[in-house]
Amino acid sequence: MIDQYDSMCFACGKKNPIGLKLEFKKESDCYCTVFVPREEHQGYPGLIHGGITAAILDEVCARSVFVEGIMAFTASLNIRYRKGIPIGKPVTFSSRVVKKRGRMHEIEARAVLEDGSVAAEASAKIMEALHQEVPIS
Ligand SMILES: CCCCCCCCCCCCCCCC(=O)SCCNC(=O)CCNC(=O)[C@H](O)C(C)(C)COP(=O)(O)OP(=O)(O)OC[C@H]1O[C@@H](n2cnc3c(N)ncnc32)[C@H](O)[C@@H]1OP(=O)(O)O
Image 1 (cartoon, rainbow, N blue to C red):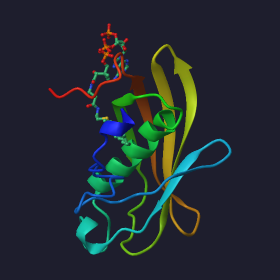
Image 2 (cartoon, protein in one colour; image 1 turned 90 degrees about the horizontal axis):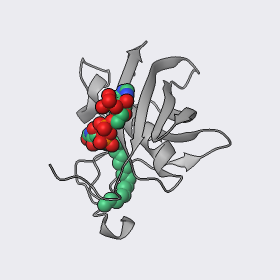
Image 3 (cartoon, rainbow, N blue to C red; image 1 turned 45 degrees about the horizontal axis):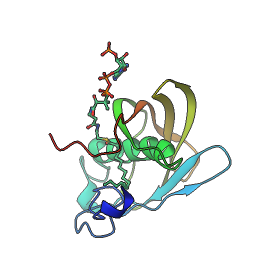
Image 4 (cartoon, helix red, strand yellow; image 1 turned 180 degrees about the horizontal axis):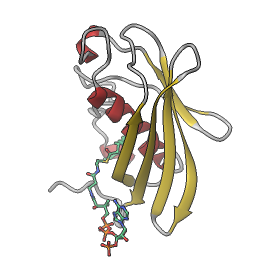
């Protein structure tokens, strides 16, 4: 499966010219990435677009399952946006697995600003794929 990967993922693909090119690392009980939003990621002036925040939360949640070698898809993603995220300042996104039932992994994630405040929180359901194939339809 990894052999077929074309590095074009919007969030992490190294070959995607308009992608975020996120890099991740695993820490004791969580999985994380640091992102510095640029102007092109803006919604309201000076603040990141909520859809970009959602994309990163989605990725960091799915990856906390994927990192265990399991092909999985986001079945649901719920986000609470608490504070605007300023352009040009680092934001740490992290996720952790809170529960697993059958093929369903329940994940929590958050986006934390430089001052330690939580800007967004997410809960996601990430479902293991039945077949190790990427659905086209
Ligand atoms: C070539 C590749 C190389 C790889 C290298 C990659 C590099 C690293 C890239 C990383 C990339 C990550 C990217 C970020 C992650 C995305 O963004 S993934 C993209 C967004 N998500 C999708 O497109 C998923 C689309 N949906 C689906 O494919 C399917 O619906 C799912 C989620 C896989 C589930 O389908 P299914 O396995 O057929 O399961 P299904 O029968 O629908 O459900 C079984 C049961 O689960 C439960 N269930 C299902 N959904 C839900 C839900 N949302 N809530 C509660 N219960 C649910 C229900 O009990 C359900 O039973 P019923 O209610 O139907 O009776």
